[in-house]
Structures are given as C-alpha cells and as structure tokens.
Amino acid sequence: MVSDVDLDATLKRIITGAMELTGARFGALGVRGPDDSLISFVYAGIDEVAANTIGHHPVGKGVLGSLLSRSGSLQLDDLTAHLAAVGFPEHHPSMDALLGVPIIIRQKVFGSLYLTEPTSRAAFSEADGIAVRELASAAAVAIDNARLFDRVRSTAQWTEASRMITTALLSAADLHARLQLITVRACELTEAEQAIVLVPSEADLPVDEVDILVVSTAVGLYADEVLGQWVPVEGSTTGAVFRSGTPVITAAFGHPPQAFTDAGRRPAIVMPLRSEHTVLGVVAVARSSDQPPFDAEHLDLMTDFADQAARALTLASALEHARYLTVLADRERIGHDLHDHVIQRLFAAGLDLQGTIARCRSSEITDRLNRTVTDLQTTIQDIRTTIFELQSTGRQRVGFRQRIQAAVADLTENGAVVTTLRMSGPMSVIGDDLAGHAESVILEAVSNAVRHSGATQLTVEVAVADELDIMVTDDGCGISADNERRSGLANMASRAEQIGGRCHLATPSGGGTEVHWTVPLPDP
Image (cartoon, rainbow, N blue to C red; front, side, top):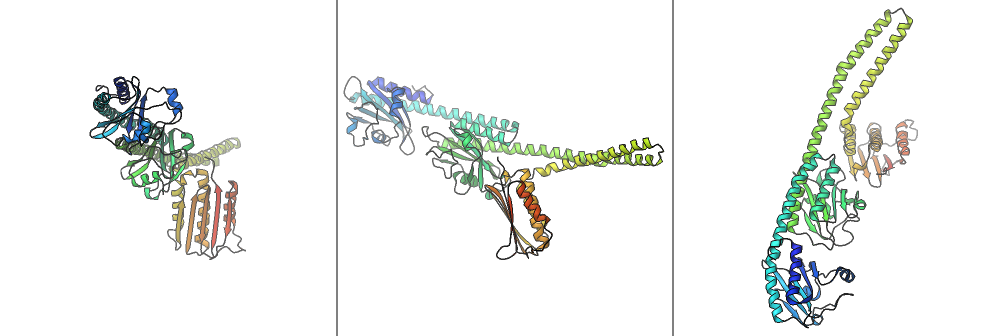
C-alpha cells in the first residue's frame, strides 16, 4: 500500500483492505474539506446502479461529519441512535454497526475511514478497532506519498504546459486563436468543466478606464451560450480581478456571465493575464459541484501558467506589430517610388507624345497618339489611387474611439470653445462602415457649432449599448428658421436613414443646438 502512488487507487485499496480485515459489508473513505465538509467520498460494497438510485454523495452532515473534526475513532452498535444521526436517504441500504477512524496526515485530519455491517457478527469488536486504527496509520503514509506524487506530476504538467504555450502562442494566426489556446489548456490542466477568457471591450483603453469585459473565448460546458457575453467591471468578480491584478479562488461570482457559475455554487479560479504593468484580460475556470475545490497549490500553478501566457501574448503582439510596421514601411517606400519615379516618367512620356502630336500631319496617327496619351493619364490616375490605398491601410487600423477623439480635437483644439467629449460602452463593436458614418456626422455637427454658432460650451457624447447614440450639444445662437444652409443637416439625416436610424435637431431649454443621431448596431 505504501508504494502505491496513485491517490484514487490508494484510497480504493485502503477501503477494500479495511473491509477484508474486519469483514465489513460496506466501506467508505471521506476526504475532509476546508470547512469540515466532505469534498470527496470513495465507497465500496454498493454497486453503481444502487449508488445512482440513492443520489448525491454525503456532504459531511450527521454521524459522518462528526468524525471530521475529531482525532479519535468512533465505534457504534447502532448508528441511528447517535445524537448526530440524521437518517438515511431513500433507497439507502440498512446500516446499524459503525466503525469510524480518522486518517491523520502531518497532524491534520485528512479524512475518515467508515466501515459498517460486519457480516459475521452484529457489531465490530475492540480488536477490529485496533486493527483499523493501525491500518489508518499505514494508510496515512500511503496517502501522503500519493499526494506528493500527484503534486510532482501536476507541477511537471503545468511547467511543460507553460513552456509549450509560448511556442504555440507565437505560431497562432491571430489574437482570438491565441486566447483559445490559453482557454483550452487552462481547462485541461485544472480539470475544469468550464473555462473562459474575458478581455476589455476596447483593448486600447487603460485598465482604470475599462468598464466592460467581454467573453472572448470559452470551452467546456455551455461554451456557445457564454461566448460574447458582457460583464461590467464594477461589482463583478472578474472585474475586481482585472482591476486589482490579484487572483482569487471563489465559489460565488458577482455578476457571473449567463451559463457560467450561475446555476449554483461551484469551485472556481479567476486569474488575471498580467504583463509588465498592465492586465490584458482575465481567465476563469470552474469545476463541477461534484469535484473537489481548488486550493492554494492550484492557485500558484495557475498563476505561473497565466503569467507565462500573458508574456507570450505580449511578445506575439509585439512581433505582429513589428511585422505590420515592416509592411507599412515597404508600402511607404513603394508609394514614394511610384510617385517619384514611375509617375514622373509616365508624365514625361505623355508630354513628349503631346509634342509629337503638335507636329503630326496624319489625322490617323494623331488619333492613335491621343488615345495613348489618354491611356497614360488613366494609368497615372490608377497609380495615384494605388498609392493612396497603400498609405491609408495604416489609418484603417485606428479604432473608432481614437478616430472620434482625433476628429473632435482637430476641430476644437485651437478654438475658444470649451469642449467635453464623453464616450461610453464597447466602441470596438462599431464596424468600419458605421464608424465612417458616425465620424462624418460628428465632424459636421462639431464644425457647425465651432464655425457658426458662437458657442462657448460644446459637449459631444457617444454611447454604445443596444444602439449607437450620438449627442452633440452647444450653447450657441441656435439655427434660425430662415437659414437656407441646411445641406449638412440633411446629410446627417440621410446617413441615419440609410442604416435604419434617425436624426433629431432640437433647441435645449437653455438655448443653443442639440443634434441627436441614433442608429442600430449591425448584427454580429
């Protein structure tokens, strides 16, 4: 028994050995949890069909629980007469005599060995008690060895996983694929039934300005249902870990995503993905209620894994950004070469042909040369369009929030108008097409306020929830009824109507102008 290094097999061997030693019909070993409950219950003598009929395993109440906090054995001729007895569940076999012996490892109660119903007599003898106590002492050594082996094996698995995750993340195609790898490995290593990774709704915001986390990847139970859900940072367990950068073990979530830990209390670890002085996101893993809870050892192993994964994510992002900058530099060089060399040569060739046309006496040749000049001009225009597309690629990567901030700043930074910009909600859900409409509307409304209203105060509010809501308010002179310059306002209304929204112009009670532009968000 002492040489056995598999914990589950060791527990089974202890039970069957005790049953053979005492002639007991039933045997079990309960593992004590941190709150004197049973976190594991291994049994023998009852087949699987009967066990399923009985239902949930004992949780440590009644006579079984009374042994978890004591260092001495308990021997009863009729366990139903004990003061702590709470009765048996339906379909449970009848049991009278009980012999319970604690298993103590390193001065702490690991659990208790339970034996009932000796087959050859009505009750257990004093000799049975002595024999089982001796067995429990040997069992404690075997269990300690098995637990040590489990820790060594688990540590080796986590260490190997941390090493492999770096290579895997660096070769992954994109951020989503990298996060999926982290989620899968975390779920496997913790033997969890669910694992999710939550990231800020807008990746470019400072940690203290993030107000919404979104489930980016999910594996295990209900993965499809939980994917994409939003969780507020304020008041949520995941948000607290994101803000503090401190991991937690918990059985109760604040603001759990639907279909994740909201069906009851379950053991879970919430772990930040920390890199340098920032937090990239949060990993959460949850076991089923039937599995043992996580402990400090799990937390340490998970911390090392998450920190390594975060460093690999940062490195992968840096390499991707470096490749992107290299591509941009190549495109910039190509654009300059096209403009400085190719276009100039084509332009010179066109001028030369035009000089030839002026001296040509054949109408047929003149027509052919004119067509060639036209083709050269078209080619020059195509090259200029290509140069513009090459140079605009970098601007397309700028997020919606940055575009709006830059647009408002460009129009107001050198003026006398005191401008306030408020943006709330996950701006990253705004696609390129909708962002283009919104940016044009804000430019038009802010430009009108700055150039024509005489305002001293200007407020721009952009909110994303179920729809995109833009409000631009100034304290200027307002728009007079006889103003004929309304093309800009008509353009804002037209943009809203094109995508199923609305644009409303009003005068606030304190004067000025209020432009309210609202459109629905496109389907994800």
